[in-house]
Length: 160
Image 1 (cartoon, one colour):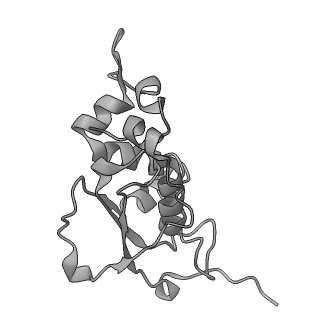
Image 2 (cartoon, one colour; image 1 turned 30 degrees about the vertical axis):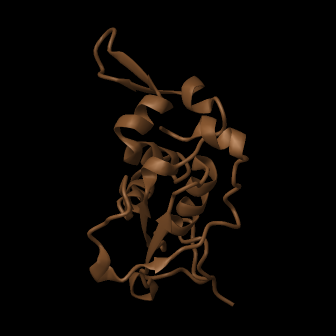
């Protein structure tokens, strides 16, 4: 029996929509990365992009564990001496919540050209609106992998 390797003609791309309202960032990102990578399909191969397109809405309402939004920092460097800049996740959630979700998913994808190709199929929006209605996205339920925080942690972890 020969090993099956998916060809571009074998891959059928589907569009999924995920609502990030009340979802914990890491658990949401791992589920989205799994779909982008194509691990939910029987034709999955680690060296081929067999994944689907994912639209994440309500990224501004994503949750983090209590205290993590203030403690964890996002770093970037300009390439010049003294060019290291950092911001907390709280500041990122207030200004660019789409970037928080995109960075979390990017860290869970393969590094290199294949991961970049998979990341291009991710569309993230801060609010409930998105311009991809023509693709007729299916609703992707991630409640089984998203742990709801308690009410006390909810007040501390959600961006105000």
